[in-house]
Image (cartoon, rainbow, N blue to C red; front, side, top):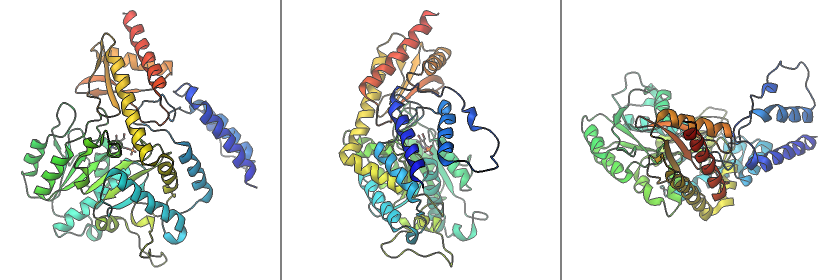
Length: 457
Ligand SMILES: Cc1ncc(COP(=O)(O)O)c(C=O)c1O
């Protein structure tokens, strides 16, 4: 009964994936066909899928394709997409081991593999969540509880009202989702003391040490592996040492940057990361699994499960070698997102992950290098990872105009930012499909847009 509609969906998906590399990279419309009234009667499944695909088409962005350099956006490896289809077909709930021993086993395996790849402690607790923001929420909830427990306060039982003072310290360049996470766990978006950053966007350790020394209140320090603009890494080894000396919890937001640890040529950037107390890392960015997928990792599993675990008379507890997914992440019922992760990691292998990271970094450097050779074009950052910041004519308006032209042209897509008070184009190479030819073709489109703008005066 289901075969007809699944076969049709597979054909439509294959068509999308085959045409992805050569589609205009931006959306060409708004998918108005998806609006409309709720039908009174159910419709034929194949007709629904065909109509959904046709109506969505103009509003789809080729963000999983090889020339999308906006935000930090990975594609989806075919093997991970295929496993994602199975995940939907199997429709397993990973909240309880008893509801899917298979999903549970996949979570355990994936958790172990990711820790191994990133060089993190094998005993660390891992929650599979929807994205790095939720990984920050999850890890920082564990941090909050552990740090306050040390001060004699039980947050799980009593909440935050009346709790001892707690300090959160973040870098001037911490990602916005860290502050959203703080807001969501009741610590307040604006409560963090901000530590000055250097010209690359890295937290200044002398400033951190000074701030840590300002009071004896329990503290959580939010460090970063991979600045969303420059790709720069906070000096993690020194930050971890400063946190140790001050008895502070060290959390690292490594949404994309932590994957550098899996690539021998870039691993030095993450030196010291393994000594932190918690980490947030995305899988839907650089590991190229479909949305939504990330991991919250906490060195000591106890505060993570204390903050997340679910208990009720009708729920079953996990046995010694079993795992209830709900004990490690904020959701109760949850999609078995470990299956696509498992498939991606097996499909790539240790070498494949390293090659993916190295290749994207090399392509970002290649694009930056070629653009820097153009008259009037400046690369604003050291391209240490997969991120490049480019400025045109040393002028905000010109830079914004080049970005708009490139977006309209749709050979590639990238966005803008403001770096140290100056407008810049952001190039983020995070996809598995991008080749040197894609990088060169995109660089040509960017250079053409700049030349055309300069010629127009
Ligand atoms: C450093 C950093 N942290 C967190 C995030 C948020 O990730 P997500 O959108 O997966 O929640 C990003 C996204 O780019 C990021 O670069």
